[in-house]
Length: 196
Image (cartoon, rainbow, N blue to C red; front, side):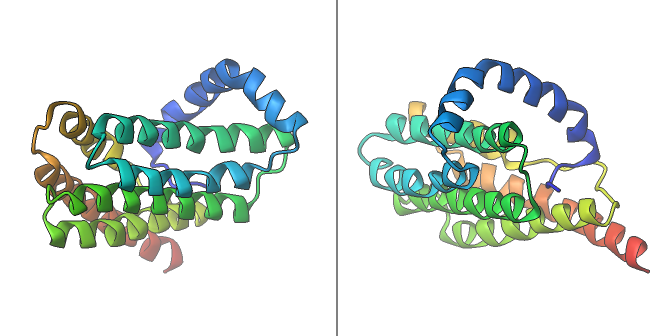
């Protein structure tokens, strides 16, 4: 199971196929080294700590590390598929690591004073609820039709913030929270229909 909306599913398989083709040599190497997909997932957490550390002094490096964590997030799935051992635990562990990465990225910006503190506290809570409910909807075979995820709003805002010092993180996070809240309401509706 995963936390993709029905709309996103149209693009997941082509993306995974392309990503698997590009990263096949790296996946083979990691498999040969007996690297666990969960270890690849977890590697996002210490890199997230580096993002917090570098955001104030080298924001472009912090953003580059953030992009690296996004690639690791795709690599863990490609590696799990190469091993042929995807599991519910692995999917949940991946979600936990993704959530930690997002929280650390938001904390990094908030610590610089460039994100309203209330939004910085609210974002990880809503993000976790959002992903958990999408996961649960897919598990119950009641997927949400669409979900505007943070990679469409927050990540471009983070790029503009780190490379051009454009102070858009507060509006970007606020807008992302509004869309995630809408998706949470859709997910709750789907779950109540599926279970009732």
